[in-house]
Image (cartoon, rainbow, N blue to C red; front, top):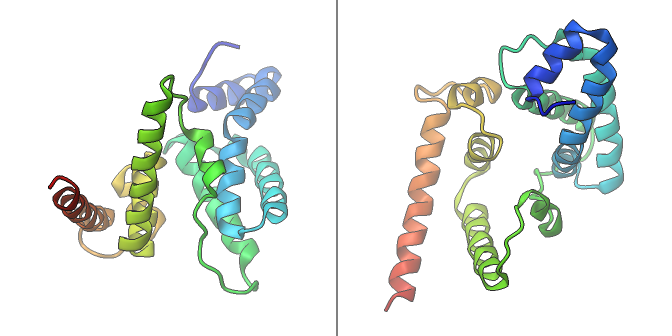
Length: 193
């Protein structure tokens, strides 16, 4: 099967039922790991995350024909994951969304040929994660992640999170960037003397 976008795969599956299984398998292979990590962040438990992931893919398989292409597939996928996890976690003891474990987050990082460069890059990423964890409030972290990691447009983030402020998600991005820029400025002053 030629390399198609997620949306093209879905359109092909909807148009040609004979190709539906192959298209579904391709989508599953592309997104299974990411869905599992999202579920791990919500549940905080690997076994529960595996169950949630399986439930989500069963639900996706059933609802895939209804995908209309009004948003990116990954936006729709994240919404399905988020809603399913929230619904399943209701009634369980309250917990905050967990950051990805160190080793799991590295799955999405491209390999770097030079070991020294990789160490430097890892140190910068660790510092950025620390600043984000320490300085950003939970909503800023969520908006930042959806916009920059999941590549969701700000208006989609605003709708997804049901933000009612005048600037929507943009206000949270501006606030987060301001906090992080100040942390970088202070770090440079301290280390460039």
